[in-house]
Amino acid sequence: MSDETFFEPDPVTCRQLVAFASDYLDGVLSSERARAVAEHLAACAGCHDHIDQLRTTIELTRTAGQARPPGEYPGAPAHVREALLAAFRARRPQR
Figure 1 (cartoon, rainbow, N blue to C red):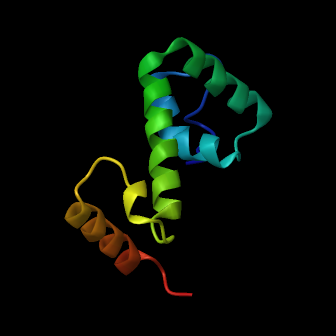
Figure 2 (tube, rainbow, N blue to C red; figure 1 turned 30 degrees about the vertical axis):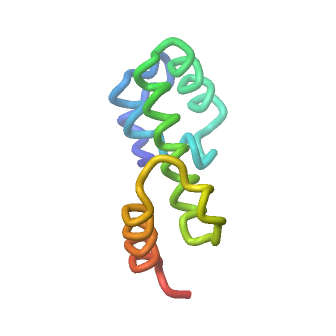
Figure 3 (cartoon, helix red, strand yellow; figure 1 turned 180 degrees about the vertical axis):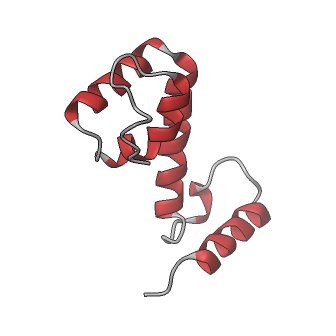
């Protein structure tokens, strides 16, 4: 996001946190901004859950193309997992 006029370091609102979530997770916020976001996360369960969901999504997306034994995909049925993996692979930029 990196819009200097949008972010007031202290206190961080939920709206600001959502806008800066990716920058926070990527570690590209200034230390002052990162600290303000961390303070907000400590006090706001909804934003904390949002960040946790983003972290999980990033990790699942990052590892989606890696081979895993059949039993290591909890939750969704095999046909759903395979469809999701195929969709992720199809959208992955070619190197």
